Image (cartoon, rainbow, N blue to C red; front, side, top):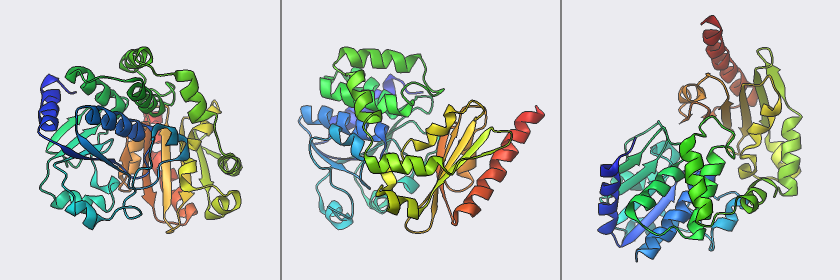
Length: 335
């Protein structure tokens, strides 16, 4: 849990800065994108010069949050260019793990500039000089919201929209078990500040591209149920991406579809990447802690939502995860 002293340290660090680099983890989700936009606007209003940086493209459905194109590392800007920039503060949101910051991790390990981390994940490399971390928070957006309130920095309608997206997406639009009273209280204040939930829901969940919809159909056709229907498995191959015209960001949240089946408590989605690795996304709506499973393969996340990269082929990845899920269910059944 964070306290007033944690917030004060952040404020003091920000007050001494003029030129800020603001970034997040690879494959940015709604929490990451929302926090980037909210913090960028808040710091700009304080007179700071803010440079946003992505490590990979954001999904198209978060595009409405960004008024301008955000530079992507190795596509629009290089590590050498970053090293020559005059940043006096680096802020990393929604991760505290070097493994989630490929290429940028080298820069962070070598820089002498202060690093501020704002995050809600339990996995941590303690990469920040100052850290605002609370693993009990449903979203990093909650921490940013509370920081803005504590510092009495204005929460404009645009900031309210961005933070509502951050919190709503990381709680599955308030469906996940991490949706507590803090979530609802914060979102009520954000609505009062200008967030428009109905429009945001449309922009996020009723705005599929045709390729993404076709990709979902391809994924659904691979459904397998194991362990008396409690464990659902689906996969997406490179051929699926090529046939549908969809891209890797289009897989975000598709894993949740199988949880419409009443018996499903744990799910896994295996997506074949261009380099041959398999990205495994995991979800749980029961005491099975999928973050422990992901950690065994170098990944991480939360007890109910986690992920990892596993060597291919897909069938190999499926067998590895099935063994781990089976072990966890056996432990639960024995108690």
